[in-house]
Length: 258
Image (spheres, rainbow, N blue to C red):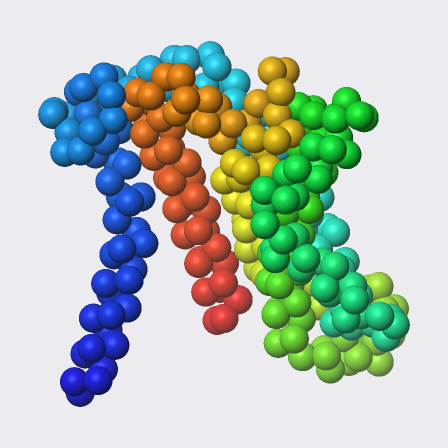
């Protein structure tokens, strides 16, 4: 009993330590003062109004949402195909393919940012939608491969074989039998891919320019030159979007479990 209590206390302490900095951003975004401080002097929504009224912040937010949506679509398709090749096919070198697919999750993002900048700059792809989508797809594919790979391991392979025995082709068995079973996992993987793009700051910092700037790059610039509670308001918006999507992932995974 004592061991269980101590374990729960340690885990709770660690979780509070990890979550507390994020929670402190919320009251800081409501501060009446003109700079970041805690505890806040008073409560106001002035900085949220300033965030939504600022064309630069709105442009950066729209740009990030657009990039994240395109990244989610492309990385979900690419990652699902890679997961199928790793889990279902007899392709030689599947281990190498899996290592390459998961590599961007292991390599530090600052290294990827420098490498992508050196590749994109001569091609004039920095700050472009194509450049951002390609870069963020590299970051997001590992999450899709992991989620879809786990779903495929739990999928009963006899379902597809039974469909083929009933006259379905291999493609029909996949699209009408196997795909609906892993559909919730695909949706969850697309959410993770969206968040991997939308929340990225390091790689975006290197491949942004004046013409195309993500919200992460905009936050970095304001931290250097314009440190006001607007940054905390923007951070709270990011946290809110992430929480809503994570709740969606939880509901999808819960549906799959049922």
